[in-house]
Length: 385
Ligand SMILES: Cc1cc2nc3c(=O)[nH]c(=O)nc-3n(C[C@H](O)[C@H](O)[C@H](O)COP(=O)(O)OP(=O)(O)OC[C@H]3O[C@@H](n4cnc5c(N)ncnc54)[C@H](O)[C@@H]3O)c2cc1C
Image 1: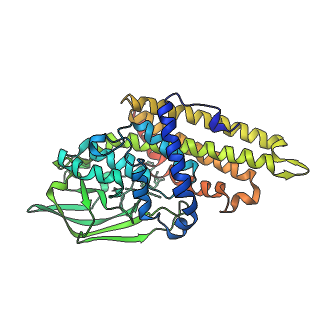
Image 2: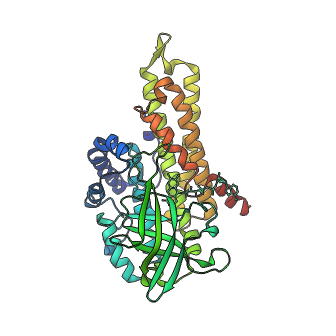
Image 3: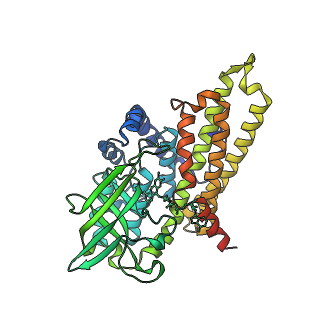
């Protein structure tokens, strides 16, 4: 029995089962046949975004009045789980649907919401969020990209790096410095519409350890002029507060992917260990294989129950920064440990990129780094103790 089938998360219901089936069918048809090519091209097809929009998978938790699916975070979680199950590590779905769209929904003016959300829901616009700079990642207060008001426009100068959806993004939430106040007070979220935008340039597509199909890029801004009304929420200096409020959901999303990634690795390994023979018997008959997998299954269950607890808190609107940070560091740490131990059971085949376990190993590593590093998560938790 697959690990992923021996336990049912308490927040699931029949409607979510239907969403899961819809997402599964979509990813099997639209993603699986293209993944090898996307990995070589370092991007998904632009039309894939529109297809996901047509299938109703984008912005599934955004209210229907803004073109979304009217669902909840649980709907997003199910779609992300099915993306992972299909082995799709190229599609920047979560940044678009569960980060960019919620920022606009929560902080956007009515005009901003009406202008951008319906297009994000159809895939006409692809979203990205650009915080990290070459000189500042964990330390958001050290961000330097500046936006200086000149008449009705901001003049933006600076650069960002490691930006997911960097190739396809047409709507980017950029963290900019609009004032010189101490700490985070001078930071604002400025939404840029890249179509025909003078002074906006996409840099290199970055070669990564894993997730080769994802378009992770540098972005450059030189005297880029952005209308004043594109400040998210219409008021400067709000970025730090907005980021602090939204980061727990971003961290939970990473934890959702980690829980699923760990379970999938175990299921694949059990299947392999029951087929592969050594010394005249199945790998699964060796006590070491059995114990390693039993330990991994237990660790994965511990992750799953913590993540489920956080999902339930979030669905009630009660997810706190401490719990989200715990879920993020613990789940991703366990994911990496579990996948490493599973890979060992594949022997040399585990090191071959044609085996999903090798790709999962490479993809998992970044989970401990982005969305706030695991060291920063522990700092945040320690502050609450
Ligand atoms: C594949 C990928 C996709 C990404 N996508 C995006 C994106 O879409 N948008 C975006 O804005 N960013 C994105 N990032 C950037 C990511 O969020 C940053 O890499 C991350 O926040 C860490 O910042 P840094 O790389 O500058 O590391 P640094 O901040 O330089 O940290 C280096 C090391 O020092 C440790 N460290 C730093 N400060 C402390 C401290 N106070 N206490 C203890 N240890 C500390 C860190 O934990 C880390 O181990 C992405 C990164 C990758 C790799």
